[in-house]
Image (cartoon, rainbow, N blue to C red; front, side):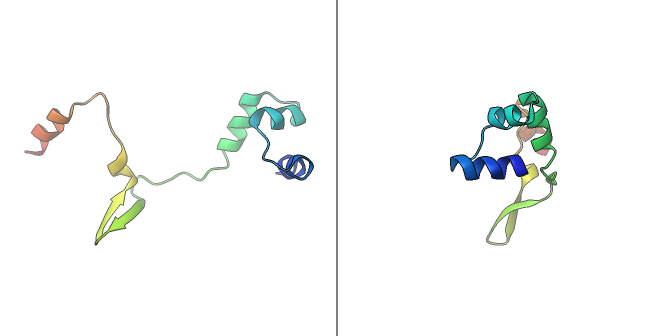
Length: 77
């Protein structure tokens, strides 16, 4: 990402999305989409951390706000 590196050299700070877009003559939204495309997808089954033999997975951290905790408790029983 040459624009970013050049900006850092000139300004001694990270550029904002707006500043990158201005340098590229692109819309901020387009720059944001391009930057997001650089991230590798994360598996739902990827361990976030491990406590005493038990891993906590990304999937365990997701919450469905449309379903009540009472329903989950009932379904588990």
